[in-house]
Image 1 (cartoon, one colour):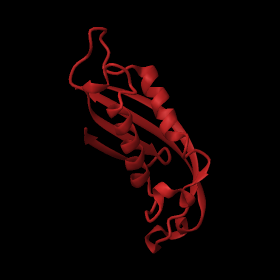
Image 2 (image 1 turned 90 degrees about the vertical axis):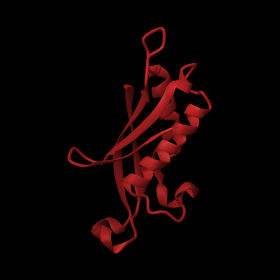
Image 3 (image 1 turned 180 degrees about the vertical axis):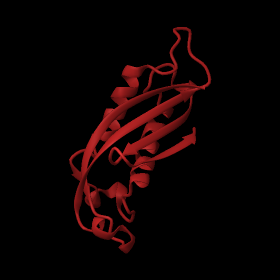
Image 4 (image 1 turned 45 degrees about the vertical axis):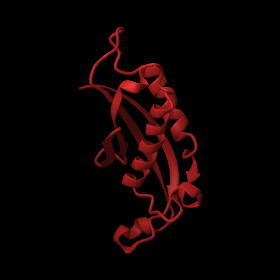
Length: 132
């Protein structure tokens, strides 16, 4: 399996209003480093799994609506607890839609798996990964 992974980041505010989250129940900010890995079973005639430039652009476009936002106020998270895992799944779904729409170039159809990792800190991260 081949993969190309690109990175960006977002700064968000949110609350996690359940007792299990302790002090994170209140409004707080977070900066997430976001990695998106695009997997293919082969490379194209140019030796590419995925165009890194296209992957970088699409990840930035997917993250832009979240950056500097209070996730508690966004419709996409209404009725959800915006944990790292839930945010990772949201980003995954948006990237999967971009792959389906062939926004990663002519090789989009070869992308068979995605992994989205959100790094909360140097010591903790969460992700969502699945076949397309």
